[in-house]
Structure formats: C-alpha cells, structure tokens
Length: 106
Figure: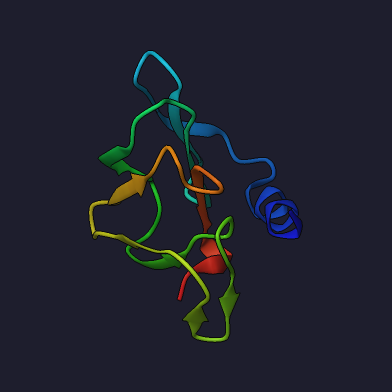
C-alpha cells in the first residue's frame, strides 16, 4: 500500500471535510482540498455522487492503480467544476474503496 503512504503524505495536516455515510458500512470523506476516500463494506454496491472538495479534473484511484505520467493504470474519477464526482464501488471488488488526491490528478 505504498500509494496510501503517498496519499497520507499529500493530505497530511488537512482537516477532515465533506463527510458522508449511509448509516451502515459505507463512508466517505475528504481531507481539505487535497484528497478524498470512499469505503464500501456493505453487502451491496455503492453508486453515488458526492462533494469531494477537490479541484476539477480527472484523478487516478491510487487503490486500484496509480498515475504513470499522463495515464492512469486503473479507475479514473472525474471531478466536476463544482467538486462533485460519481463513485461506483462494488461490494465484491478486490479492494472496495477508492482514494484520490491532487498529486494523482491527470
């Protein structure tokens, strides 16, 4: 989980922001305007649009892959101008969570 160490370093010192949960085992939150992470530990898929607090652009999920130059080796997340992004996290995914941060922006 080398990429999560990088995530931690990028968001270090940033306040928790944009908290969301479904009252069960699906949780998401940001760290200032530097990173956002979403978890799905329920028995059903999660498909939701959430406020990330991140600048607009396309980000590489650092859980399923990584940014390599101008490319992403796995899931890409598009953040709109208003900071909103759609997340699809399957309950049967190998890693049922997504993490994006400003240094993983394409």
